[in-house]
Amino acid sequence: ASKEDTWRILHSAISLKFVHKLPLFVSMILKVYPEQVKENGHIGRLPMHAEASTPPCINRDEDSLGLLVRAYPRAASIRNKTDGRLPLHTALDSKRTWRWGGIKELVAAAPETIEIPDPCTHMYPFMVAAHKADAKETKTRRRIEQLETIFELLLASPQLVSL
Image (cartoon, rainbow, N blue to C red):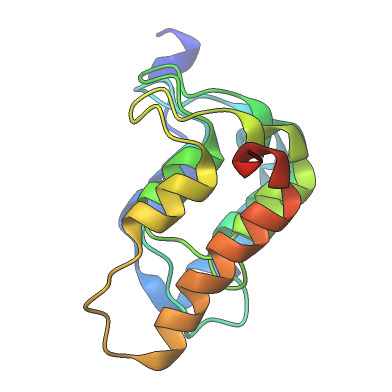
């Protein structure tokens, strides 16, 4: 079997999405199989790409995406083989936020990515965050998190909106 056909527990755990214990489980897997954070799964995605494509759970102390960024920060600047997206693009498209969704960690690991347009939408990351912000969101905390994400992305790259 090819290397991409090999079963990996880290990829499998991320795809299970048993939300409240996933960060603990991912942390344990990374200790036992640290090399898997750098390996593509069967559809050519790194674990960071797979986790970035899932919505965050804001009731966690730690998000799995943050764990993956710390374990392999270089992956924050690696494009997904299937669609050419960076983890930042995918995470924003999945409505992840600055504080609770791993966006802060992705930007810290690869600050240059905030100036790279999403190849699928052709929008800059702050635009994707604004586009994905739900105007009908009724929870004040969630609205603030969405606005904070847009603000932090703009603060980090103000030249993208200069006249």
